[in-house]
Image (cartoon, rainbow, N blue to C red; front, side, top):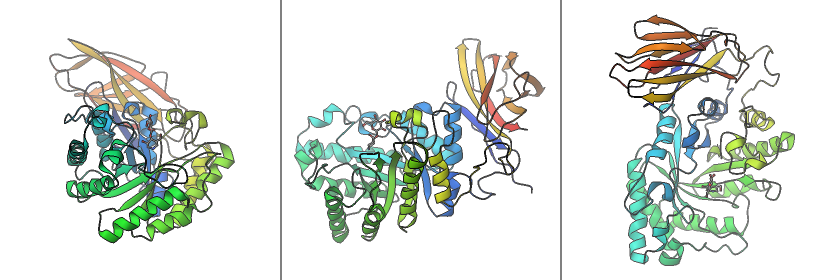
Length: 450
Ligand code: 9MR
């Protein structure tokens, strides 16, 4: 069967990373039975997302796994108040912009996280009196939502405003303590005006089952709905471990919120553990979401165990080497997708594919060194080809760990000794460029593999 080729090619500024991928035969997400989390979830009318850290996007395996598997991205820390408005009125968007640009250029949706939260709050906010704090809160919402207007699918407008424990009370914070209960409503009204197209969510943890805390959030959402306060969705963080397992009434809890007329989203899923026990817990979560019509998507709180905020608990779907865990297979299966349980070498294996990621490794006035890391996809490969287009009038003065041929300014590089790669394994070639007056970045085109 002939499949369309799919090619992503980007050039980013020097020092950043360009990733190019070309699938040579079959196995595009669009063309086959769902074999990625994102395509399987799409088949169920849902998104499947991950929390993304800007500072890992330059790691080829991280970016390749993110790009292959996920259809939504949540900046893990980059949109928080301390990252975006460290001093009053001075907005810093560079790190969040990197996540948004990466995600959007690859067709992913973005969840905005988070506008009003007691944590990761710069100290200046806590010094303000009530009137000033109200102005600052609304200014922050307008600053963030204005900058990303039209680019964010759902915003966590207010995060974690309720206390743990049995009281169902609001959590102490500068917002709660100075502005009272009404700060949440005000934040949502400001948010609706700032970007009317974005879904506005309340997000919290330990609200996954029916308990005093989720009852308090439920009462608030019900009140908002009855009074026309703009709220579209409730986020259930879903950080689980043995002390806080997936609740037996998870689906029931999601459903009662959905019945209030809001969407529900699983926003920060991770489950500590390993093997079949972890896999079974993930299955419960996916099954619960699929059983609730208004559960519109699932986000896991990271791509790989090694960068998880709970890395010791190995709570995610890919291990530290980006290998799929049993939990991955369980999620894919629960989403109705079909994995590759037989492993490499079995009939039906993925086609040979590779990605090429470029970095500038050294830079001086008259030249620079570039490096392209070739990473095999889901199948082992015996050869690869990558193209590098140099901006005129640059010229390559030497190249190592690869064999170049030239057509005009396009350099096609094939392996020297390093053609054979295991699935997911990487090799690199490097080259020295004479700038001849131009320091612009080269374009790394498609990587093809056989
Ligand atoms: O994963 C985030 C971690 O990198 C930060 O150090 C931490 C700081 O507060 O926040 C983590 O993300 C939290 C999220 O923003 C809100 N819900 C709980 C998440 C895990 O702590």
